[in-house]
Image (cartoon, rainbow, N blue to C red):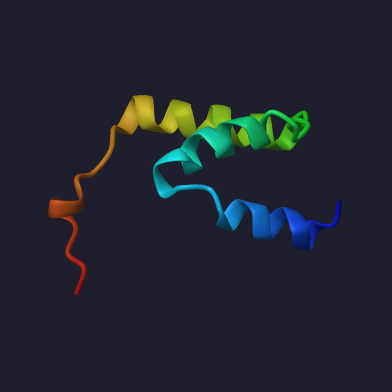
Length: 63
């Protein structure tokens, strides 16, 4: 089966079943182990958020 055929089949799926189809398809995509620098960046971000908190969108001067 070609990718084009699969795309055409997806077009036939009712809108309310798209989430179910997504969950099934995502199971076939292999997970990639994060690189050490990615893990370090995540840990740094978590530490910063824990120490400094976050800012509400309403409190930001967007101008």
